Length: 552
Image 1: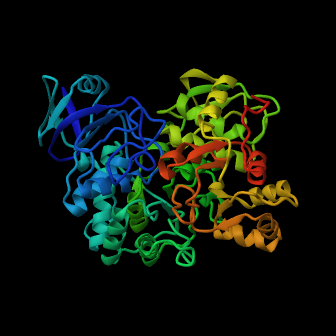
Image 2 (image 1 turned 45 degrees about the vertical axis):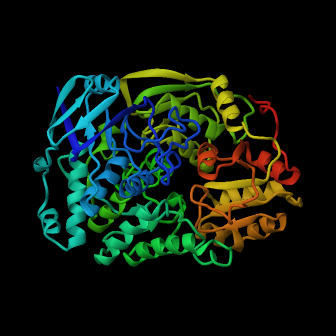
Image 3 (image 1 turned 90 degrees about the vertical axis):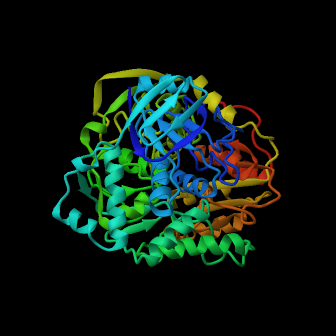
């Protein structure tokens, strides 16, 4: 039997196997190596020193930063073994070895080899072999020499230290993806500016000290502090300082301080067919699915490498043949459903298609841009796929594999997801809106719901600067502030921390399927979920609905 070396190294340890992908961001505590995703089969298990096996990863692109931090502190897995393509954790391991000399091997096995190893209890990895369960697998390297590079690519490989490193990393990632060439991209969206761990700052400042500069227009994801106000908000300097320095490092490298997790809301949103390089999982899925643009779900750190070169591996959904639906999901859409249905559909769709692009049928009500945003974000928490299609709606929904299989999303499935998101107490201490960032349309919709009411519990809305400016100009912001809501720029809910996140909170309520999934692990609080109107009612009364919505 043979296996492929993706990142070289030596390791030995117990085998920890899971059939379900894991997001390291929001799923693994970098301080302990313990799985904190309350919904994952490995919840509570420590991964330190383990040979971790899973089909692929899923979820946030920031997982590469978490893995890098775990590798640098010695709290990470001893090795990673995947059955299929995987970029996010692979990139973190690659950076750990290339930049910081902390080798963490990554292997790719075929299905038979993977299944054989998953039954073992202990494994040893050398430079040439993998041994486990009485079996011995020969390891072969990636075919990097097969890459077809342009004269400009070769020039960058001989260029400045930062550009040379960037091209070497891009070529390694391209080889493990099976790409033989690179593609030009018109813009990049950086996800690695979130202060997920000290490793993110170490990487960015190391690159900035190497005088790295982006060569294509580059926007930035939400960061971990309100950049202008974190000191006045009481954020501890030991967190606020590094988080602000991280943002500053990317700005020094030429990135635009857009600080939004919803770059598709910016005037620079790409057109159908445009090749871009975005990180941030919800943005990638929205760009591919709704806009018809083309981008792989690039992991943190690779986003900067592509920004420095303008080149990305020509693989995955950059290729037309990789964008087709390989599973048809028949949705039983409840009549009379409110806006909470869209994140529920997205979440269950990811569970039903965790490793392939689905086509959703049966969506008889046309969702608006914000409904699609909510659906795509929730889909990205449970699926590794970089896009989805919706029959009669998304621009490439007619691209279907003739051998696509079928599955269903029933009302019972949606009700089960709703119950999963509503396991917390009915008494609410915080309403969390804006995951992903609220749009101007959402701000206006919220202003129409709050009317002349006053909130009883803290209500925080995270938005991009462009949205806040537009809401201020048309009077929407004044209505929301009169209600008592706090509008916070730069941050998003997956990067917020105390004391901006009210420390006294025991249970929060959100209309985001993405945050309902991640919040228990990220915040340590109980969660309730509902529609925008439900969230307003909870903000006013202090209680969440204690029963399924009527449409379920």
